[in-house]
Image (tube, rainbow, N blue to C red; front, side, top):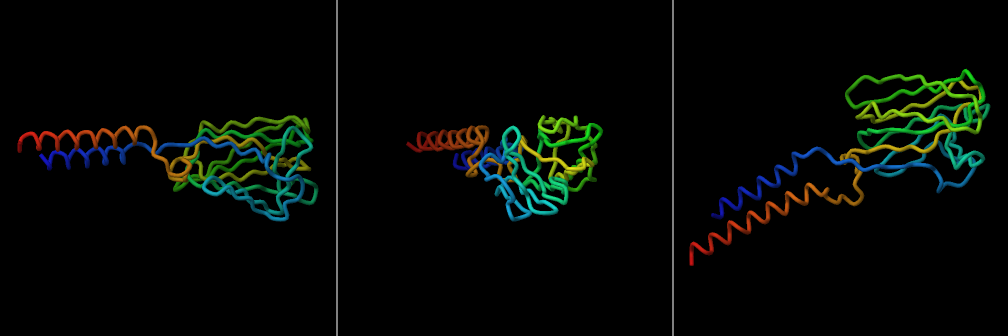
Length: 202
């Protein structure tokens, strides 16, 4: 009977390990940051994402909410790279500050062990109107490189994404409900087997 309990417990633990990694949804909107030049080219959200610029990062609060860009010679015309702490899906974000109607956003999506994907998106030329960019058709994204041919560049805001659990997506490492259910089932089966053994001995 002890062997049955041991096998039930091991089976439940193996099954919980075989479940797909859970994902946690994150939103980064820079609202907590002070306006102006950050004096650094890197902004880290530990366990989630790191933003790196080709120059100092700049927080702009003049538009709708706050947004982030790399300060360059003509404003926000530097490149911003986003490195995620794990594989990302359901990625969406906005751009702001475009001045030319025919300008574009250039995005390079990085994937672990896969070739990069380059995407060009038009922007509307309305300086203070946000353009929405939806990349939810892609999954497993590990990095983004963002740039534009707009003379004054673009700022970025409202990053929404699901981060796979291997990137620390679940705060505090709390097990997902399915894992809890399997662990409880395993302990229940182990307890039942031990109870049967005691009854057989008595």
